[in-house]
Length: 249
Length: 249
Image (cartoon, rainbow over all chains, first blue to last red; front, side):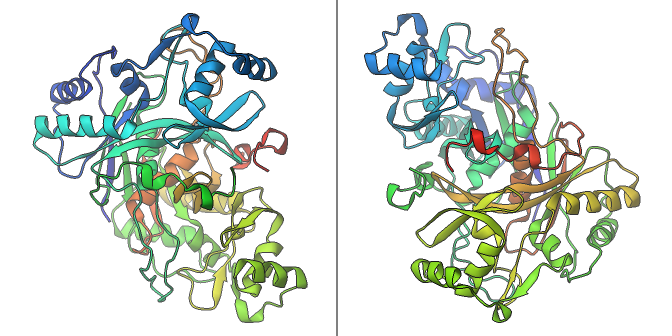
């Protein structure tokens, strides 16, 4: 039971398509005299990953289909944005109150297929990375090479939740870390066998990072130090609920 | 953008009904030479709050109704436990795959009305506190009196989520802190007006604390230091989604 520390990484410049994100993060850390240690988890906001990977779309170039136009009208949304939301999704889970909740190609269930209009420039939107686990892996490999430390990387995004207002940051990609910490089969201090407890550590790590870097400051990276986790390379897939166990499709 | 630190509070003895929880926490902090500072958030696990408040029920004393027996049979659950789940709820949101998701009297939507069988002793279950915001307030007042610092308190519990496996700790009660941090109406660096972003800071704080204290160690309290938040006394109520905005009832 050790202290946990969340350290914002300042000094990362505005990220542009084609940028080497791992290199930008390493160089900002060097300038801050922040040395990565074994076990550190580096949390990177989805927005800068999408920017570096060129996942930006100018709305004026999008031609909406009839289906997108119809849904956009009923939701009071931009029909070009709705076109992209549908294109990035495998199905619409719910639509109402101005929110379109979809399941993305990655299996993530979130508002607007994770497409975001903030902090990217007017008339431009950012799509989610094509494969956020791969993005996390590439950044991890670059950071490990630059630092010599064995670290994990979490790509985080801000999701709403049913039944609770407000959003929390969760992991949409990860590398070097098992997303779930399993206590299943272990016993509590009274001998009761813990059956279902599997803390979603990557999500709690993403949330902890968000507390430190917030929304307005333009700081897209934080180091979370001191978390106990298991090393793994399955990405976030183990956290995506299989359809047959899902009560809220 | 400051560092955040999460500090486990060790040395809290097994909590029993009638215990003065604020006093036990203060005394453990004193022994650890941990001095609360203005702005600290003290996260307390629901389990010890329920224990201190005597919210423990021995299953052998519960007489299940016909409704509970029927639901228990179809779910493969203990009918006395199901009786308590129904009693603590205002409605069943979903039941399936061995999970009964209810809305509690407090408005929380969670599995089994938040009733927990782990770490309380065999044949005994712990109900949620009657009013977790009041519990948080009482602990906050006691800690502020003992320390002289102005702090916030979050009572946390472990909830599952739709669409994502694993659980995260969230706030079921709070005092001295606004549960949502509002950026609404503020503008990003490109002038885009942020409309919906309201980080659920109390939930991210609860999750960060869980990372430090885990499930098996018997450490029920952590201090989260360095989080920017607004002081408020509305409890977690602002985070409970109003029925008319809920897409997943």
